[in-house]
Length: 245
Image 1 (tube, rainbow, N blue to C red):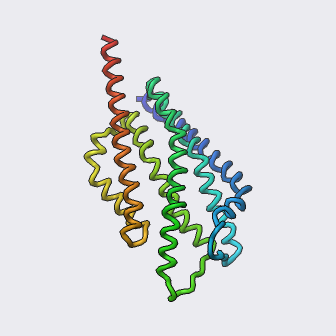
Image 2 (cartoon, rainbow, N blue to C red; image 1 turned 90 degrees about the vertical axis):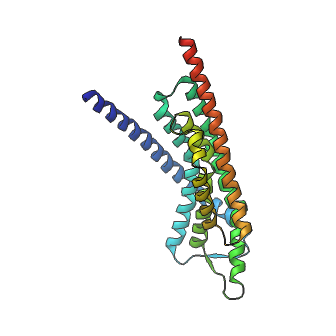
Image 3 (cartoon, rainbow, N blue to C red; image 1 turned 180 degrees about the vertical axis):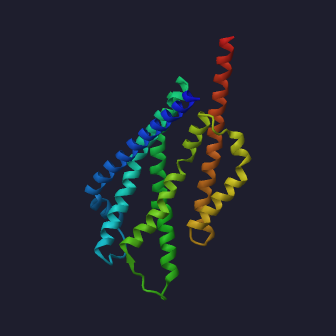
């Protein structure tokens, strides 16, 4: 019993270590991002047809913090993924270690792809719709805080959602899920993704369609990739059992 307790404590200590390294890395990237936050801001507001306003000094600091945080999160993803890999590494075989290690760059690239999709495709579409909706009834006045809060809420979730295929591959590799589970949950996953798309887009069919289709394709791609990883895993298991006989 004591050995079991010591083993659990060791696991918690290892997890704490990995979380601490990830948190410290994020703080370091956050501080570096603050150095370049003005350049990031000017890049994001370049080409806007309207001026942004601030209602107080604290708004400026809040906008800087939001922008630096998003950059810090993006930069920390590879480190966080590597720390997670190091945590589960002892439970993986040699082949599984090499395979799961290759997922780390993919996580970062898919996060950037998701952010880009939200920023370059979805955000302009939603913003244009909302401005058109006001028509001549209202005078449009955008504060910097409200504008960037809206921007981040609309783009950051896509950075996370686009990582779904790699996350599914990783969980399949370590045996937590399998393609059969994903197929059985398809209708519930579809419902959740469609609701998500409807909630974050304007109430028109085109916007809903443009967001829903990529999300459903991501889920189907996740199932296909899970099948590929699962079949390879089963094949390696059979080969190992036959060689040991």
